[in-house]
Length: 484
Image (tube, rainbow, N blue to C red; front, side, top):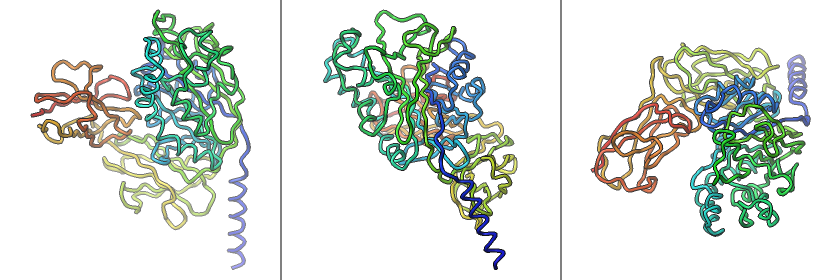
C-alpha cells in the first residue's frame, strides 16, 4: 500500500511539474488576405511575406484550397483548412459557444485562442460613402450585412478572455474602423466624408477587444495604416477606388501589444515590412504581443481532418499529465474504441501516426482517453474512399415553387468555406448566383435553401446547383433540378 501511495504521489508531483505556471511569452499574429489562392501575382511572394514578418500564427483569407501550400511556403508546420489558419505551434480546432476557433498550443499544457474571419464584401460601405449615401444609410447597411457576421463570435471569445486565455481575432473585415473615421480625419482623407462609428469595430471594442494597430499607432491622421489596397494587381489603383484599413489583428485577455506592422509593397504608405514583389491586393498586418497563455483544456485532433483511404493520420493531444492515458479511434457515434494507441512520450503533442487502411470509408472520432478508457476529449475526422469525387444532387428532382430547395453533397474537401450556389439553367456564370450557402467545413451533408435565402423567387423552370472550392469559383461538381 505504501509503495502504491508513493507512486501516486510521484505521479502527482510529475503532473504538477509538467503543467507548471504559465510564463509570458512573445507571439506574433498576422492577418493576410492572399487574393484568390495567392496565385494572382506570384505565389512564392506570399510565403516570403509571412517569413519576413516572422509570424507565429497567421489568419489567411481567400486561400481557395491552397492553405497547405501556403504553410509550406511560409515554413510553418501546422495548418487547419477548416479555420484558414497556419501556425508555428500545434492547432486544435474547437467549438466554443457555437463558433469554431483554434487553441494554439504554445507549450504542452498552455494555449492561446484565435478565430479568423472574412466578412461579407458587398455592398461595401466606403463605396456608399463615396457615392453620396447618408451616414444613416451606411450604418443600416453595416448592421444588416457585416455585423451579423461578427456577432456570433463576440460572447464566446469574450468569455474565453475573461477565463484568462489570450484571444486573438484576425480577419479581412471589409469594413473600416470607428477609430479611423474620427472628426479629425475628413480634413486629411477626402474619402472620409464624415465621422462614422462603424458597427463591427464598435461591437468588438464593446466586447473587450483591442485593435492592435491602434494600440501602437493611436493617431489615424498621422498613421492611417491603409491595407486596402496596394492595387489590383499591385501598382494599379482605380481612380474611383476607396482606400481604407480593413484588415485587423484584434486582441483580448492577458496580452500586451508590443508592435504592429503593415506588411506590403516596398515603399507603400505606412508599410513597415516591404517586399519588392507584393503578391496580393491587400496589405497584411503583423502584430506582436507578450501573452500569458491560459491552461489548456483536454484537446485532441486528427490531421488531415478529411483523409483518403490509406492516407497516414497524425493524432495530437494536449494535457498529458496523468497516468494511463491513451488515444482512441472511435466511431462517429459511440465510445467503444476501434483502435487504442498508447501515449509513449509525454514531452510532445504527438501521440501517434495512424494508417487509415484499418478503417473503411466513413466518419470517426479521435479521442483522448483517461486511465479507465473514458473519453476526455474528441474531435471528428473522415476517411473518404480512394477514388471518391465531390458530388452534389437534389434530394428530389422537382421542387414546388415557394418551397425549400434541399441538396445533398458528398466527398467535399472540408475546407472552411466550401460552398454551394444556385443558378439559372444554361451556361454557368459562376459570379451570377441566385443564392449560396457555406457547408460548415463538412465533407458530407444536406443544405436547405428557403425562399428567403435566395435573391429572387424561383419561377417554374430548370436550375443548376454548383459545389465550389473554399470561398472561390473552382467548380467541383454540379447538378440540376426543376421548380414547378
